[in-house]
Amino acid sequence: MSSTDDLRARFEGAFGAAPDGVWQAPGRVNLIGEHTDYNEGFVLPFAIDRAARVAVRLRPDSSVRLLSTFGSQGLTTADTGSLDRGTSKGWTRYPLGVLWALQQRGLSVPGLDLLLDSDVPRGAGLSSSHAIECALILALNELTNAGLSPEDMVLATQRAENDFVGAPTGIMDQSASLRGSAGHALFLDCRDRNVRLIPFDAESAGLVMLVIDTRVSHSHAGGGYAARRGSCELGAEVLGVKALRDVDLTDLEEACGLLDPETFRRVRHVVTENDRVLQTVDLLGSSGPRAIGPLLDASHASMRDDFGISCPELDLAVETARSAGAIGARMTGGGFGGSAIALTPVAAEPRVRAAVERAFARAGYTAPDIFSVRTAAGARRVE
Ligand code: ADP
Ligand code: MG
Figure 1 (cartoon, protein in one colour):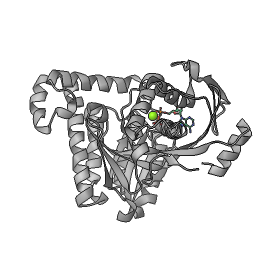
Figure 2 (figure 1 turned 90 degrees about the vertical axis):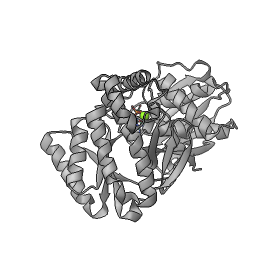
Figure 3 (figure 1 turned 60 degrees about the vertical axis):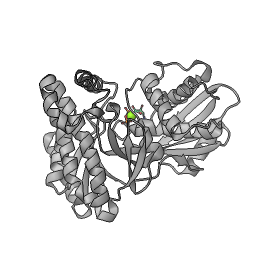
């Protein structure tokens, strides 16, 4: 990612004046708790040391001019008086969605010039989209004195993704991006939106968190994600609960008799995954990061076998990382592609990387992108 000075200079070159400031928001890795957020359950993501940065200047008129440091897309222009759902494409959907969502809250939104830079891999399940949204909403909150609380910003960015971009996502990604903290994971109860920071310091435990981006592109807007949400809604309805959050492990036997086999497996994933999140929080507190490997493995098996959201590349990444020395591994993110994570002893890192690369080459898959991530601070102003 370019330095803040570079970004300021590029902004001035493109827009002819200095930005009012530069804001940054991280991507996230979900340690555990997949497809539990929209079931009003538990998730445990952490903000990572990869971020989107926006240099922003408010304008006296209603024009919006958007530029990024990547890709071939040149300047995109819009007008705050006519923000149109469905017409914008690519990364500009996210900032425009934020402006739109703020208008939906009744805020008057000024025009602006914006330059985006990001080193969050896109479409890898690390929430490059919310990183953009969170950086901008933080900037606007400050520059317009909108007085939005973190929770307001969480809900506004969800609105942007759901109703402007058309991605039916929950509140996990932006909560991690806005409220994450270095050395911690964020335990989030998606029902009441309470958060608690849980110490998670892999480095001190001699571990490194590897991300294996399979390069299989996922799409939240695609049918699989919507179908899983549909199964969860159906399961909750048949079981007579508000959300699957209200189903316990002990209810599963009875649920088995009430649900068709596929819906039952979907429900079982959500119920057991919620339990694994709670166990992970307990174990991190009592025994530290080295203790959670088996829970990561069990989470992956549940997503593969019960929820049906893995793919051959993710399975290969997870299995290979485990046999090469990772203490736990799972796919992370929405599924159907994207990334796996492998919690790996520092000494085993080269072996794990080499083994996964070799296995992908042997299978004829596109070479994966493997990198390590650390916990990092949440969204903030950097200049
Ligand atoms: P994720 O949020 O998991 O990365 P999404 O599909 O939600 O995946 O968002 C990815 C989209 O975000 C891309 O298709 C692109 O429009 C936009 N985007 C985010 N970061 C970048 C970037 N650095 N370069 C280009 N597009 C980006
Ligand atoms: Mg996204």
